[in-house]
Image 1 (cartoon, rainbow, N blue to C red):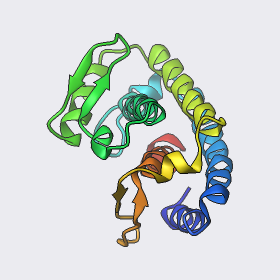
Image 2 (image 1 turned 180 degrees about the horizontal axis):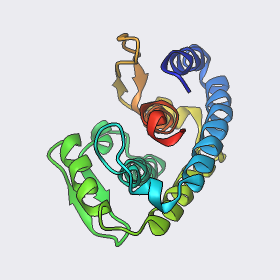
Image 3 (image 1 turned 45 degrees about the vertical axis):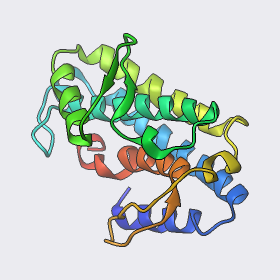
Length: 193
């Protein structure tokens, strides 16, 4: 998806009342998730080991998205248990696939940590886990457990969109936005070729 189409869709979704926004996000996410999972499933070993536009291996780009989805699932688990602070959105509280907890000094440190770890993982393992986590997150966000009120009752954040404009949204919604951006736009040039 191109940046302009993504921005237009996001701005339209966030112009809706919370209940309608939830339904629009579910629908948008279903399409994005399906396209992403098909693209990841189609990547063979040779392409996974090729360089991406930013110098990482394609498998590391997929792994980057996968780890943000794992972290997002952990964050939504906290929201579902009643935690409302946006501190859940950054650096602290990440748990890897082996159950090891980590805290990071910055988003860059989080990303660097995973680039190093994923360089050694076999592609088929990373590929299967990436698709599983993407579908798991999409299933959770489509479930009745996720309510507009839960997403609304979080601290506001103001991400900058691709057009340079900021969009003030509650951090519960922001978590969802980040995943859509990762799967649909930010890494599209490397995944959808």
